[in-house]
Length: 371
Image (cartoon, rainbow, N blue to C red; front, top):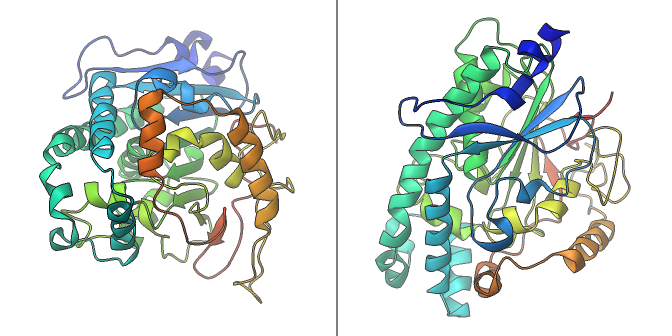
């Protein structure tokens, strides 16, 4: 049993980095659920802000109580700096006209430096440094997470990974690191990456898919101008997974368009309960025995014969409205920030799912559920 659940049965709960490893200052796991289960999930938060979302656990409070769940605590000092920087940047954008212009800048697919407003570029110094620091550290944290999984701290149980923004980047680099090892095939059960600031090329995703036994969900929003702006220096040279679908023939990689839920990059934290429903993860609001889109409240399956058939958005909207009524604001500042950040609407309905070679749904994926 010790080998099944980890060293002395402690598993990830007993793991904490005792000293700095390379550029990493903080790395440990906090439980999101109680008890031991045969499947476990690790959730990775992308940044921290003040108020309601000041903890790593906060975005994941709506996860369904099934299976063994942890959140990864990493580099909190830098993630708080990033959250403050994003707030400061968005507080400076008071013109709705300017916001709409930013949205269409990203939607046009032309995100070179010449297309961004001069006023926004002038304010870039507020966020560029903390963003670059967190980009680098998330890659290092991802590699360290790979070492933890490689050492079987979790025992010989299947692990599923879910993360948003820089948390998704942590998972991406974890998988890339594991892909360099022989014998790592199938070490990870299922993966969900939301608004991921990572390379969306076919080659990169083919490489990391070798490590995953189940499916990989790429949740994206084409009109996420903040992600496009943060990635402006390199977005012209590479595709960004959080802004567009992954064009790949591997049918296990599922693209989910979250444009009707995610109105801006910060919504990946604020609207997580609705996003989880959209990608088929059981929540306390919409429970399920396993991670599968079998509930009628989530997206409808589309067929190959008619891939452009309209998705039944009304049921998803009802869930969105129900969860929105329960949502609390982070602070008075975040209310203003919400008005500023909600600029990237349009696109397909919630859970508009695309796949190269087929059209499917992000179903039959187990995320700390019971088979």
